[in-house]
Amino acid sequence: MLALLVLSVGGPAQARMGGDEKGNGGSVIYCPHNQPWERYEVLDLYEARAVQTFRLKLIEGYSYQEVLGKMIDRLAGVNPTRAKLYQSYAKTFEQEARMIADAEFTDVPDRGWGALPKGCQLVQGAVQYKRPSIAGFRYFINKDVWDAMNNTQRAALALHEIIYREGLLSENGFESSNGVRLLNGYLHSEYMRNVSLRNYVDVIQRSGLQAIDIQGFPVILHGGGLGQSGDGSYAVEFYDSGTVKKAILARSFEAPGPHGKKAPFICGTEAKGPPAEIQFYPTGVIQRIRPQCTSLRFVLYSEESYGQMTAFDVQYDADGNISLASPLQFELNHPNYHLRASKIGGRVEFFPTGEVRRMYLGHQFADSNTSWIRVDGGEGRTLVELEKNDIYFDVVGRIVDMKLLPRQKAY
Image (cartoon, rainbow, N blue to C red; front, side):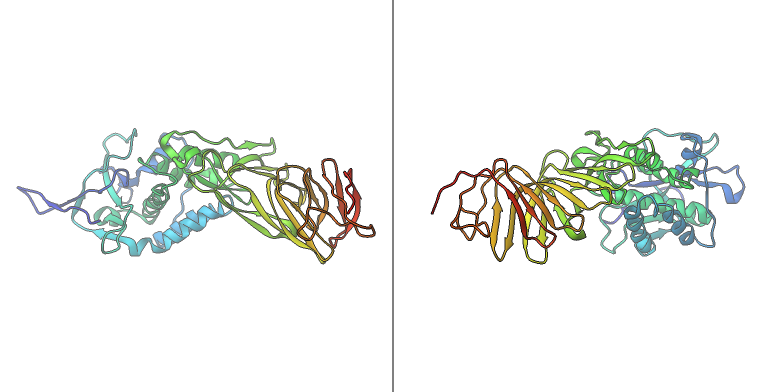
């Protein structure tokens, strides 16, 4: 959507420009009494210093792109997914930005409360559209302000717009720039020198952004996908050591399965409540996943068997290998048997290598499309109601022991 240009009356021709949507402006402080190279400062940095009391750690460079790249790189260690997203936004920033000279941008009322140095004023340095214009421009930049800023301030303004672009995603639904300014200031601060995961999670949660990486897994921080709307935040629990103990997984992720294979998990946005809970050992290694909107589906196989399982509770050993699962449905095929359970109950244990080690299920199994189980070495077939029964396997999937309490019925 194109911005509206209005000519002023009674003076020089001057364009006035405003956004078509609420909450998409980048503000800059103008202090005419400062030295020329210090007259413009992005509001985010002033607030970080004066309001949040952050100690800033600014970067200089030969170009704003160089500074911007280094700022985003600060995220790579603690939040690689967000860093990758921002790098993609930064890559196209210049081609999506329209520089407008000799223009006075109208104010975009998305700031909320703020503070200014005495004798200074706010100017609108940039306006962002959630939907690009017909010509493909997403950002409209006040060229006069841009040209007067140094590369550090230009990069800070560009990063403000990049953070805001994420904030405008439907999962965040930003309607003000408060959270954008908080995160931008934080990324420019000393906190990012040796960033604490606990501290970073707190800032992201306060900013209203939804997604974050936690110890290699995508996590969400707010209920309902409403970000700053105040619909509630999900708690992230920490050990005293600073590693995360418990969090809520995103609606789409991959869980470690048998043999190190990844199992995709997708929970529709129409589902109510949190999609899945993840727990970690104090070392930061995954300990448990408990899906709440749907189940995890794993493929099972060994040298002599294959099958599948859906589970509503999955546990891992201290090395991150799947060790125990509570299945909703289980099926294992072998040349000599076909084991199946289709109701909730029992558990399946795994060898560290991923093969099934033991099954304890409270429901009936089937063999060769019948309601019986065939035991090698025995004559006939025995109907078994596995209420308190164990089946043990070796590492290639062969049954090595069966401790059954059957109700026999001879055929």
